[in-house]
Length: 227
Length: 210
Image (cartoon, rainbow over all chains, first blue to last red):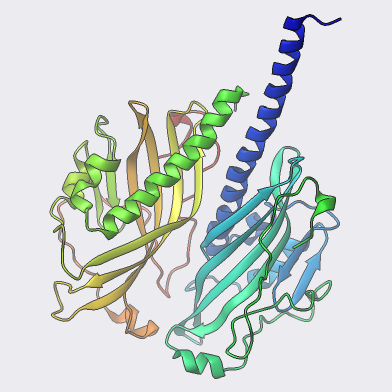
């Protein structure tokens, strides 16, 4: 029979193990915040291959561009951002979507995590020799997975909020313009469409809905949903 | 990085939050026109190599660098507001817990009557920040504060393409060193990874200075 001292040591070891696990979940929040922000800096610097390297390369890795659908598979991020690579010379290009308002939840088992952010940005470009710029505000819903001890993007879903508002446009003109839709080349087809109702950009004739749904605490991946 | 004890792991998470709070305080202080007090409130005072970089102009160096950088700023200036909300953080605390590094993007605008104008005006001012921190007497302090221009001086009422016809502003500040890594948006330049987001590091000699 265990002595009183042995029982107390056993109890302390359990507490210590539990504390270590909870600190690891806190560390995960820090690492995921850093990963998400790093994506934005790489994206602005047109370093799309390096963005792809931040992903888990799994059969079910997905990248959603809100209004056009998703690419799936281990190479999904390289395929999705190859569209931007094709634009070639990046002189005068600045796509910046700094993220804010993060809500991050790490699974109880610390194997996956989920987060949402708002991206406040613009895309500056030079078209036909003329400088131009559009506001581009997005929302992000992202699932993360830990691979070999490192947090990686797993399902990366960009939801449009304000797309196609010209820097010089009047608001009313923007509201009356046809919706801007990201042009996907025919030879880079999406693997599938976005779930119906997930695309909810601001339009004067539509309601804003809770898209994406901010994550709530969950124990393991089976208990939650995919962004 | 060497395996950490439970206490060390917890300390690193707390350091992350404390550093995030310093950058938040910085933004609130400058919005309240408290620039001349930034040195005493947020900066290291015991390091000989404290630096404050103003992206395109150069840097001030020394324990009094923030005082010289912002000391002449008029506190309580009516109608003036400098908003630079720092978001998109990447923060790494050194394995030894003595220094830390972070980058942010500052969403900002300047409102006020500027020296070349008689009427109030508003200007977009988006920046990037690369900042080194050092622990002094148990508290995190700003060590190297580097502001990198992104969009500076964009008139809120002006057309996008008109921004590039204007001459660069001449600030005329006498500084201690030259600028490095200035990469503001221009239609004739490419955006680079400036500043570089920090990566995990063990001790200060393993990393670079912003």
